[in-house]
Length: 134
Image 1: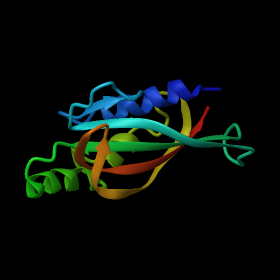
Image 2: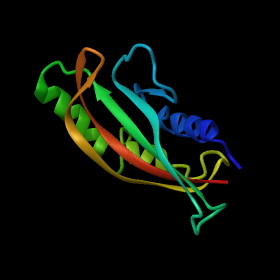
Image 3: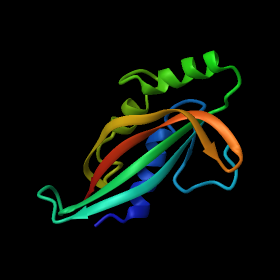
Image 4: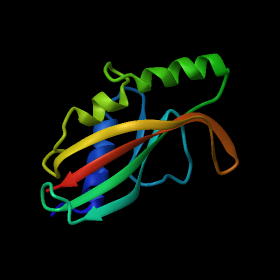
């Protein structure tokens, strides 16, 4: 079975296909936006799909605040379901994560607005992703 670390790294690899986006499979000591941070949130056993295991992830997307208008326009491009900046298109571009998953799904986004990390406030949102590892 693929490990949690392997799946997390596979998500980072997919996110890194977005030009200019810094992707992290572990939480960095310093956030340098624009950045996507992969964070496991929960898991399930006894699933009826694949090997019976499911990993749930939160992809935290953060942008430099600057002017709110510019930051919102930039953030909106990441929320599109397609296009070169789309988080969904990048992750779902290889649903097997290079062989570590049976399939995956980005199920939605939430918490659009200010996100505080440490003492810095960024504009961002969180994407929910489910992965069924091999």
